[in-house]
Image 1 (cartoon, rainbow, N blue to C red):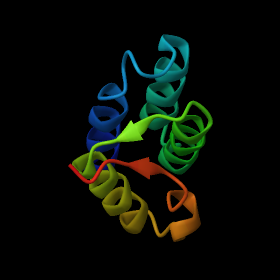
Image 2: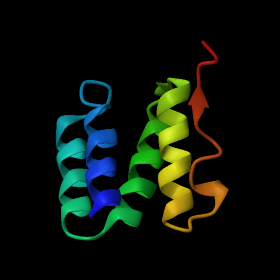
Image 3: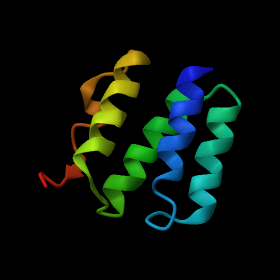
Image 4: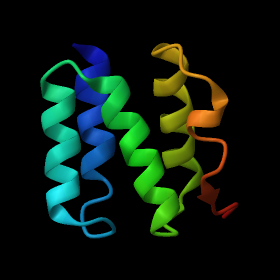
Length: 83
């Protein structure tokens, strides 16, 4: 439940930077115990739409991926700002 809650909070951070219907889809996946799929889809869309992440956002993605036992290739391609 903790991972689901944190993932939904993370997804909501991208409201306005990704399409609203995509955000709702990822939240729905997380709410239905599909957190891995939600995080993978989120990362893919962030990459495809060239969304630049704050370092804190990337850290949160990395932590969630680690807790879900996902490989680094789930998020390693994401762009982030060093500032």
